[in-house]
Length: 133
Image (cartoon, rainbow, N blue to C red):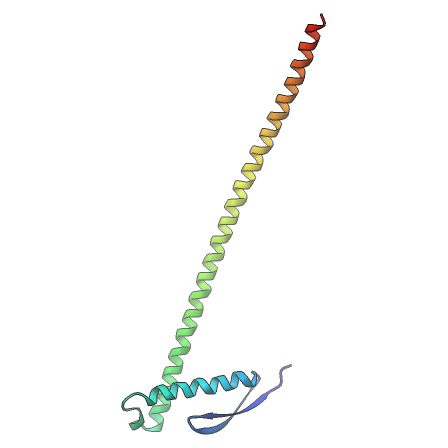
């Protein structure tokens, strides 16, 4: 079972303790992402004039937007992967069918070849008998 990690992080200049079963590096990465978002907002005109609640709502909206866009991208990739797997399956099936057909033709040609060899032997045998008469 995983152990719970407590990690001291700084978010927007204040120290917090994040707890979770994820690695310390992952929890720090989360804090860094939030700090990066806040830094982006601080570059925008008017952000600093917003009250704390509005800043938090803006942060939540943007993080949720990123989450849902990433989720959509993930679902799109999964769907594309499923379509590719189906296409690969269809191609494999088609190739197997072609291979079976080719093997059938090879078998038929081998039988015809053997029949031709047998006929040559019969004809040579007859020819040999006819020469000795």
